[in-house]
Image (cartoon, rainbow, N blue to C red; front, top):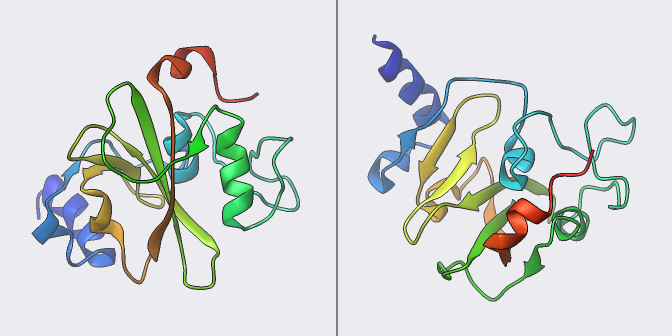
Length: 159
């Protein structure tokens, strides 16, 4: 099996319907960062609100596994809750996924009118339609946030 096919097989194992949606692998496998960091624009560290502080979490954000805590963390980067996932010129959006219990599982960042980008677990970054990742692994999109594109250069991920 070729390297390209092996990469696809891992992703398709966790998201069997993703082939029908269409996607592209956009990075090599790395454990340096996760989807929460990737959505925040940080590919240098792993973000998660661990109680023991073993992963990065913005100090001003609540350290809990709730959508509100994740929204607060992204809010520190200039994101605000918005009405929908449709592309808006001049804004970048993120989407937070959660299980039916309400516990956050994943985040994705909008690329353009059609695609989003995600870090898939400890695997690859992929480009995909937003709803392609909904299902048993990540649950559903429960919150979409946006910030002006200009804020990207003005607001760096916290140290």
